[in-house]
Length: 332
Image (cartoon, rainbow, N blue to C red; front, side):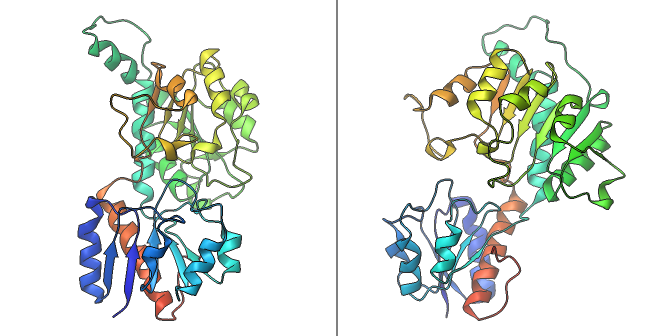
């Protein structure tokens, strides 16, 4: 019977893991440890591994060769992003890399819509006043989604679905993406440049992968192209936005606010409890202190359907590789 080890497993994933294991007659063991140099040896005796983590695996390429030496043929992440893996090192070690590119586009798209609604209704500001027993009716006055233009950067699986949701709510939707999808042209209008989108949008909603092209996509110059009363929503990846530039844009009132489900340096903060102790990240603390900024700990994926799909799709790929079968989600 094949044996698979899953790293960084949470309690809420266990039911889906146990069901898959029973249905496929495969032993699946779990650990709550992340996959690093200190934990690679846990994989000894297993035929495959699945990971999920916020920070890089290692600065040392030998970790990938260790897997090969153990007889493991792959490394699978149950996430869409693969930036925690050194792809060149993994491939040089002979490992097949797989991910879960579409665990649930609905989960992240709905998150960005929810964040947008909270921003345009000023709910973060109102709730912070309420926490101090201040219930006076005063500005800033809210806006209705049907009067706004939502600009989506990256209209792929998630961004395309977000476009449909915003369109259904009555918003005008524009998008900037090098690929124009015909099936979306009934709900959005493509623009030719990023700056054209930034200048028109009341809400800028980001849905791009993290790569060398997208890293730092929204920098100081980009924020100067945005409307002063526009909002930023980032449910993609933290490094897509230059944090210092965002802080300056907010402080200088170049934009009206931001909702961030992901931030630079989040691996040292998210999924940790800092109650009663300081967070060692000056930029994060600056953003967190702003009344017009909402931060959530990268929970856009965190729905029942997404978790089930992340478990099942990742394990299906591992088993296929163990059995010498082709996989759908190889990342080359």
